[in-house]
Length: 335
Length: 284
Image (tube, rainbow over all chains, first blue to last red; front, side, top):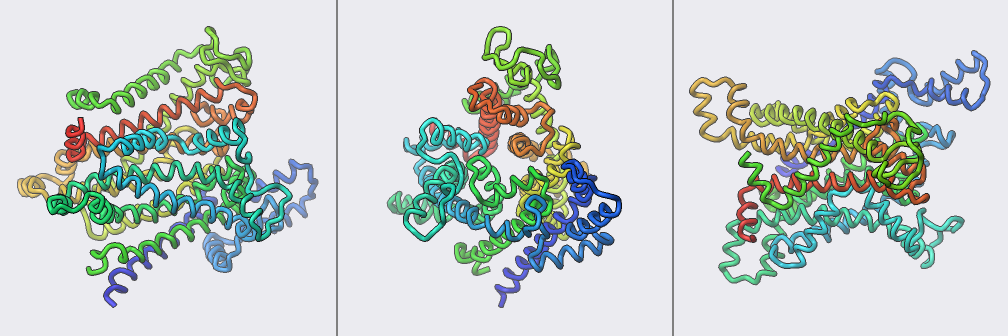
């Protein structure tokens, strides 16, 4: 009972408050900016050569206002906005007009989820293991070599790294496809062949994400380990004659892991923004590509829908990790 | 000055420092540019590097070297605005939260938590894509500043929390020092290195953000910056046409800039952390 009151409840309250603030921001931003999406749409229609008499213009404006949720006073709009949100309705996309935003997101979410969740988790694991050992045995040669690699790869803008990989492995040495998630015209069936094709297409984007991810975790872990390893209990274990491999695994890495778990939660938050550049460079058919198109075509409904959903997903994943945290850290459990 | 001398003995710091000095020199050169960066077709198009145009020219008829000078100047200026502005917010929030504690602390930390959790990148893109034509260098810097303070405020807060419990705080309070003078005279010297280290990280983040926004086409493309330079080169298919000097220049410059800033920040934080310093001396 104490656990619920002390640990669960405050986190749940913060969870809902953050979602509230995030969604409210998504609601307010477009309304603060001096651009009017309704007017813009009409200007675009006119620019495409559509003739409209004043009466039908008026009707178009009203319909558009209805669709954008721009009808009525600000507070009315706000209430409507939440009502629609609970029903999972973000209105239609402008670019692919009558298709609801929700359908588009549902189509592309699995691609992004599969690619980014896997790479985030794998790079977290690998980076922490490598960083943990490199930090503990900091005088070994392989650790130093990894360190130099990290020093060059880590600060590189992700976009440039991804572009470099694409040029190298798809253009100079055409081993992997130039882009896309599957071969054009292919039907997705449950077969070995389909699986291989999907894997071949996902390889380069995954590699680029892994490279950056592993080295980011590597360095963070190395820093933590270097400060943990000077702690008294490690000295004690060393004097006690415990094998250094065991000290590294059981004493140092286990303790240094704790801040990294929080880091994992925060990095899950970067998944959606990470997807944007990856999928743009490799033209992978996920949420990022959808987002990119929505930015280019000024598809505010779609943009707002994706932002709102990513806020929900990110905060929820952080809440889940936060709730799992007592499993890893006995100090939190017994408080 | 002595600190600088100490730091320069570290190879990482020396490298970062000289690269940065060189780039700042380029930025100053832009004031003596013979060409206007906003005008097209002032030089022959698509010529590879030669003596008259050291880094070649672009398909827009601009000199790559002089465009680079402007780009470096604008990118640095924008990121400095972002860095300074977010530092001001971070220091204020960190100090108030750490020193006041209680409700103020809880509220401010909740705010910074929400900033950490929310997909800020998407929100920045959302704002950027809606205000596309109006976003100037200064307003982009301010926008990035508004979003870049959350983590650093936490770092400063935790430092203030530990400073508050030290004896000199009580000594100065009991001898009648005002809160403001305590904070600025007594705490600031402890916080300055921390602020400086986070400042570098933030500047680097802002430059990367600008490049990303420019490539996504949500920043004004006519303003020369590292991002827009790359975007123009990509737009004109410089890669496929083999104009390596055009696309290579912003790529190499920004990679160098990022590595330099990164090395500076790790070198400074190693210098600040006595434990790391001991390990480094032990190794050498």
